Image (cartoon, rainbow, N blue to C red; front, side, top):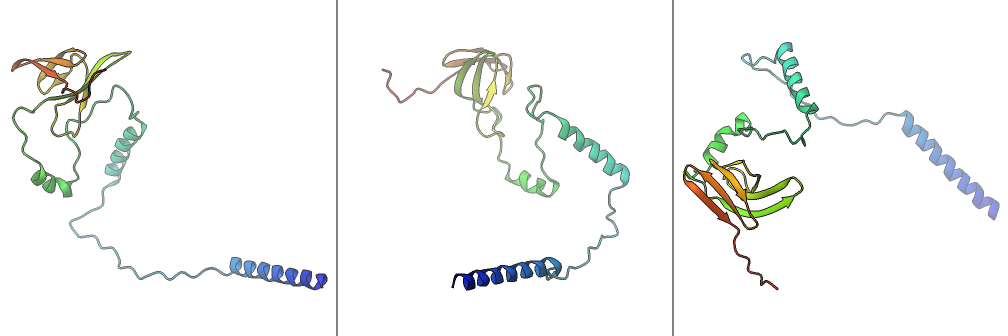
Length: 169
């Protein structure tokens, strides 16, 4: 009885080996849908070799740069793809002449004090500022525990943290 079951298992194993070899040798046929040929309009020419080389050099500079460097500055204007430029212009809300400044927090670290101020309506959330930075056209001259002082064309302006609803112990 035991010998018959062993032969049966060897027979099934051999069958699987033969099926595996057959599947390995015979290529799989995949149905590919017919595709329409790509046509280029007469006015549209592919970029020349010089233009492609210039683009690659530009991209290489981007790829080699350190995106976490402290010396990096944000671009003056955010990139908007040409096909979305019209939509972005229509969707852009009107910006008030003088933005409303709001102090979110103050932190002190080994490199000095920083203030979290929402000053740019184009950027959601607060930005980090240090003493000497320009905040909406005014210079940040002092950072305290719960307030910051700005000096600018409108004179001296003090921003304070909103009062907390928590009770002090």
